[in-house]
Each structure stands twice: as structure tokens, then as C-alpha cells.
Image (cartoon, rainbow, N blue to C red; front, side, top):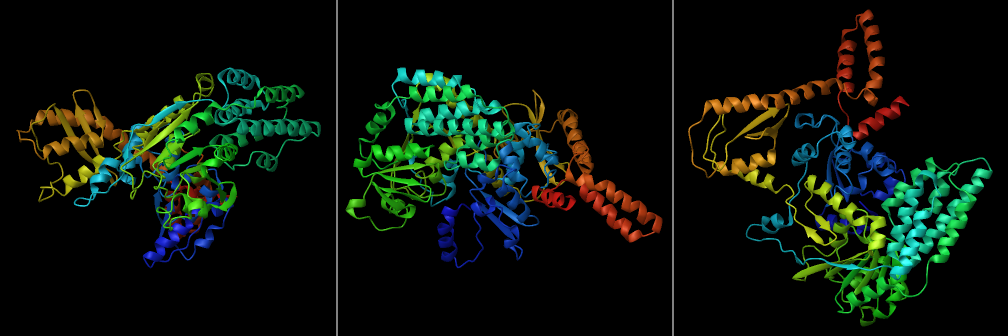
Length: 617
């Protein structure tokens, strides 16, 4: 779990008289030894599990190795941030690569590369995910429904960090920058996003950009390339900026010959174009805050957070920057700031009158896992790169136990000239569509929450399985009902998993959610005579689908499409050992080697692959 959540989990464990070792994401990121989990752990509970969606990070690799052979429960409200690959990588922490072959996903690693239809991944998610919409959760408690605050339609404010005429000039200047080789487009995108945030954030990024060019020129004169440590000092992940995570490896791969003396002049000329003075965006925020409602203002840039804290110092502002923060203009610990701003949510007594505040300014380091439902409004001062981040921010106040009947959001979007360059709103809309395809239950847009059903139909199907039926139907049984449109539902077992095929006038398709609708209707609809010809035609139409899935299950045994998988590299060695054992007549060893070949040719979890790769090395 993130380090900031350790006190919450210790309190929870103590309340239930339970003991469990706790290791933080940060320790894993530093390459923490997974053997510290021994003696063997039967269940790993991973909070804020979306932080493990990148398989090439230290934290992912360490966790993957630690959970081999154990049960894993991943907890997150936002499993998909940017693409469906996020979900595939999370599954690979506890599933072998070929585990979902019967559901049309023969390889999770290949699915992460985009070779699997989104609807197949959604179908697979139903077997692995508990995801209920807010509407479903409200009624899930039966006689004691859960109460959440109502969400009002979000308000959108279009404002820039400088007057429009100045903004257009600076945008054109940024678009002309070309230093950084292959990373130049990312540099421009980073500068444009900082321009949308605030002038101080832009100036700080320009300084770092200039230093990068100077370092690249110096390295080129010395006949060397810039190293990772130099980049990490120059572009620290202090703001947890998704763009900077992408920028580092691209810069490393293009550091040679990527800078020219003319680039320095261009950057300095751009810096001279950035005006001081009137800030329309900060003025617009002041108008939003004029009603005095308790509000959290989220920004994606640390420099912007500090700038806003200075701008609103007279409002008894509170601010959080990582582990520390401010109460007014006085440095304070993070915990003290949160208790002063949201005492009820933090289980603290009311603060002294001098420390009371209705305004908290924070970076996205505060967007996960913290209870702040004393507040009734979230302001997205900057647009993040993922709608999941929007949902995480709002999740600080859209929680059980909120004292407010309703809560709302205000989202700042850049002026049209900058919006066209950034295309942030289009990017966010596209990612919301990906999240919807992954059956996400928290869909947050620029204009507020979007409708999300999640996997609610699974609950309906579960209720049907415990409904009026008093005995289990025999294999091959069928029944007919009166329906609104002609269709046949086939329930088939493929390998160890069950799936549903819907055959209608249009096509035959695997469709578990659609089948749930038909089966629910079957509980109340009138009976009719079974037309055997209709059933036989449906079986014929569905035969192609079933044969395709069965063929994929057979292929998965030998992983024909994954000849480069680490397990297959060992097979020639094992076969050589088998020939040697055969010449010696060692039957026991042959049996063991045959079992080993079968195991190596099958799929593996991410952790098993990492451990096996270490042995091979």
C-alpha cells in the first residue's frame, strides 16, 4: 500500500485484533527484497493496485515475484488509467498467461499489446472482478441501504494562466521548439501542460528544459551520452506526472545528437515572452471560492500548488505538498494540515479557531486513499492525463459518511488556442471510452460523472442461480419461453470455464451480459414449445465459435504463438536431458522431465517468468 495509508491500515488491523506484515509501494519501488514476506503469506492484499499497471517498474517486478504461489486480492477503484493493457498487467500478477484461453484470451501478454477484442477482455473481467455501480451499491444493503452524497452536474470554467493574446504568442513559441530529438514532441506537450497550469509552473519547466539542452551539449562535446541519474535529477517524479514517466526513457534513447546551440537561444527567447502580472485563471478561481464552501483544489504541478497557496494566503489556506504542507504561510506536517481541514473525516477534534480553513490546495499526491469528506467541492484546477485521476480526486469527498446531501466539481479547461494544441479533452474522452469497455464503475469526465453500469448484471445472474430452480438441469437440457425477439441462448463449458453464446437473427456471439438479460426474462416469461429445428440451427451457427475456442485451448498447451516466452527457452535443454535419461533407461527421470516440459510449455504468471528468467541468467 502507499506509505501514506499505513496508519489507516494499522488502525483497521488493531480494531479487528489482526496482525499482518505491511510493506509499502515505495519500498517495492526501491527494489525491496520480496523475501521479507516470509514466512509464506497465504493472501496478499494490494491496496491502490492500479499503481502496479506498469510491468517494467521495480514495484511491479518485486510484487510479481513475491506473490508467486499465493492468493492475491487487488483493491482499486480505477484499474484502467490509459488503456486495457493496464488491466491485463494486473491480472498477470496472479493469473498464468493462458488462464483465460477458454474465454477467447489465449495470452494476457499479447492482449496487453492490443491483439484481443475489448469485449473479450470485458467478458474475462466478470470472472475476476467485483465491480458494482454506485446505484447498485446504494441498494446493496437491503434494509440498510448505503448512503452517498448526490452528485450535481459539474461546472466547467475556461480560463488561461495569462491573457489570451499573450497565451497565443507563447503557444506558438512552444510549438517551434525542437530540442530533444525524438523526445521533442513530449517536451512540447509537457511545456504546454505547464502553460495551462500556471506561469510559475511553465517558468520552472523552461529552466529544466534549458538545463537539459546545456547538459546534452556538454555530453556531446565529451563524446558521451547522458545517463539515467542525470535525467532523474533533472526530471524528478515529484508531481507523479504521467508525461514525465514517458519522457525519461525517450530522452535516454535519443540523448546523443539531440541538442544544438540554436535550441538554447530559442528556449531563452521563449522565456522572455512569458509575461508577469495578471492571471485570469487565478482570478476565476477566486470567484469560484467566493461562496466560502469547503473546497479542495487539485493541481498537477507542485509549483502551481505553491503559487496558489501564496495567492490565497489571506483566506486561511491550507496546502499539502507530499509529506508536508502549509497552514496559512506556516510550514506544517501533512497530518496536521489534514486534521485542520477535515477534522471529522480524520477523526480529530475541531481545530483552534486560528487554524480553521475552508480551502485546501493539493497536488495529485493527495488524490488516493484519503478521507476528506468534510469538503463538499473539488476543483480540478488542471486537467490530468487520465480520467481515472479525475475519479480519484473526486473520490476524496464522494464517500460514505459524507455530511453533505450533494457535492459538486468545477473543472478548469484551457482557452481554445491552448486546448487545440493540447487536445486534452479529446484525450480524456477517448480514455473514458476505454474505461467503459473495461466495465469500470467510476467514469469521471470533464463535465462530471458519466453513467457506468460496471458488472451489475453479474449480481442479477447470481440471484437467478439462487432463484426458483430446485434442481440442476441435466447436460444438454433446453427450454423455450415467449420473448420479444427470436434468440437462442447456449450455455457451454470450455475447459474449466463456462460461457454463454447468444444466437439471434444477426449473428452468433459470446455475450454473457446479453445472456443474463435473456435468462432474467426466462424467470417470468410464459413457456412455449421447443422448436428443435431452431435449436439445431443455433448449434450449427455457434459451432464455429466453439471450435475456435477449443482450438485455442489445444494450442495453448504448446504456446505455439509465443515461441519467445522464457519457458520455451528451457525446453531444448530438458529434451536433451530426456534423451540422456532414455539412453540410461531412467524411467522415473523421464516421467519428471515430461511433466516439466508440459509445465514449461504452458503459461506463467509475471512473477514465475521473472524468477525463471533469473535462473536462466
